[in-house]
Length: 187
Image (cartoon, rainbow, N blue to C red; front, top):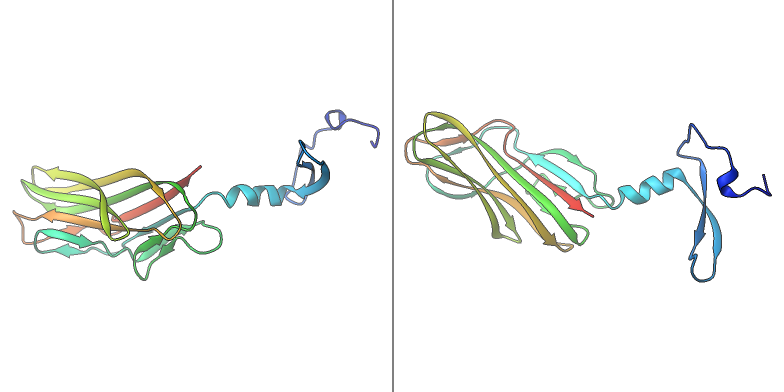
């Protein structure tokens, strides 16, 4: 084995996270021959992906038109390494690593009537950056989405708001478990 090229070795048909892989650090300059486990390589890839989702677990009624923060109070998942991306106490996402992020805000409304509007809105650093609009033309419910890609830096905050044009009913109500906001870091 000591006299074989790497390409001449037998393939490992059942690799595990503690298996060791050969690496060459700085192959262009001064070469350093090192080892790394497959688990460490997997951890390197996972450290690059920051993603989280929060939802509101109960309905919320809006009795008048206007902008309102959606109180996201339940963590669905947060796979961000180190400090968490999401905070259910404030319903806020705080960016930990600079990058481009895919952001999806989603609301489900019940009891809308003709000409009622519901919006899912993304706020960045306490200011509106994207608005997703939904209009409903009959009795029942509808959904509003806001999907955007944003360039964000560490410490930027994201929040979900709604704007409702409640004209035909005494209140608009979000569906249980439907208000949600998802944030993914794109590589």
